[in-house]
Length: 232
Image 1 (tube, rainbow, N blue to C red):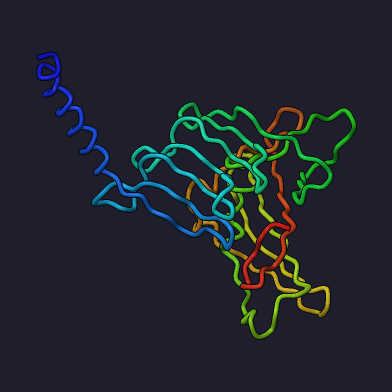
Image 2 (cartoon, rainbow, N blue to C red; image 1 turned 30 degrees about the vertical axis):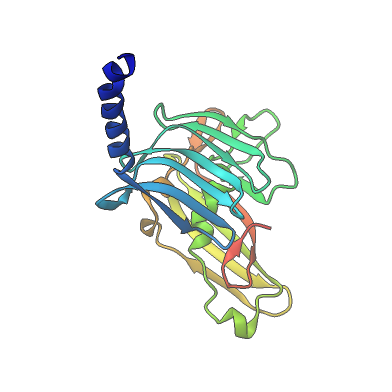
């Protein structure tokens, strides 16, 4: 008798849960040779992410995790490096940076300000939401060697990504220089920043004594066997 009384409620709850589960589809996409993303999209509109998102390094180490709601990141997201070390925590609902890991001298990232800096000046670097691994993958993904890497090879080639960040926290210029240690190969490619997504053009600007200033981010990279770029 007790079971019969609650059976209709159980059936209704099951149907509601099942209907919501069918509203999204799980998708996978390769971002780089080593990073794959898993996410859900709205059924019937597969361009809109909705639900849990995760980017995985070598399919096992999370480098980004969080929630999408109707195509927009929401709530608290966590970003890691390829070893699983936490780099950044950002709350998209409150547009608030909760944590950004300090860098040491071994970092392949360098920062420049168009200012003369003294010991008494207070400086903050520009920050990309997404951390120093996942957050910069988009800029590496745009590059491919202008020659066939399987014929000519990529040994000795080194890439340098340079991003110019305005005092408003906008990406103003984006270029990649590739040089060879074994030849006179030296090529710089300039990219149209309008080709990037809006979130990839947005930064927390550098500051000089409390005032936002123009800055540059320099990233040392390696050229992969497939002719793309990756971190060292």
